[in-house]
Amino acid sequence: MIRPNYIPPSLLSEGLYCTRRLWLRFNNVEFFDEKMDLIHARSLKEHVRECGINDSGWRYEARLPSGSRLDAWIPDESLGIEFKSGHPHVTHLYQVWAIHQELLQLGVQDAEMQLWYQGRYGDEAKKLAEKWDLDHGQPVEDICAICTDTGDPDFLVKMERSAAILIGEMENKKMPELKEITSEACRMCSFVDWCHS
Image 1 (cartoon, rainbow, N blue to C red):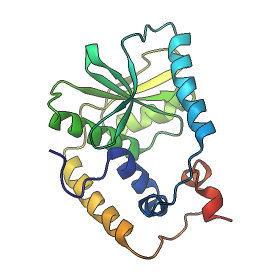
Image 2 (image 1 turned 90 degrees about the vertical axis):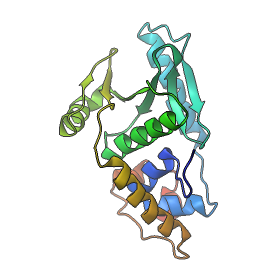
Image 3 (image 1 turned 90 degrees about the horizontal axis):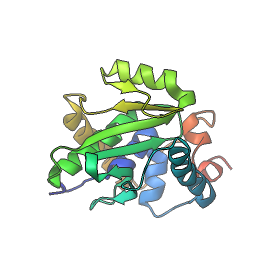
Image 4 (image 1 turned 30 degrees about the vertical axis):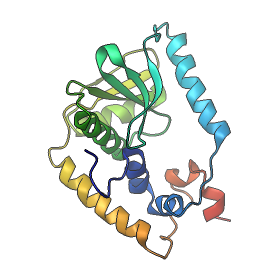
């Protein structure tokens, strides 16, 4: 059962990056960069297929009841994959751990979650994995993967605390402060022109 005041993992991760962006989305201000989203979605399939992987059993863009979305779900292996096009960050771990919790609630007991990064982020992905004592490797050419099955034992407490703080931020009448435009969260954000115009 999805908890009251539940924040879907993608939004939780987004809010940990930037409370302002979460506040804007909560208050129905939305900028959707369809072109960029389609580029990332297309490159995911193309990259997997260029590597010669048979993805005929894969389900791309799998939706969960909470509204969370898995970039890829491989039913035969009970494997969920989140593809990240930016620098590895701890919020990515929180996102997949939260998705894993939701899968457990849905009765998928043997689900495995992995984060996949483009090869250029290999060193950073390795550092993130080693910091959290997670297995990592290269499942296919030019992809670095982190297996997220063993996580932070205090994750659920931290997630609940973070969710409570973010819910308070969303319900605040005042928009959260700006980040510095030099932050990567700003440069990659579709709200950047809105915030820094």
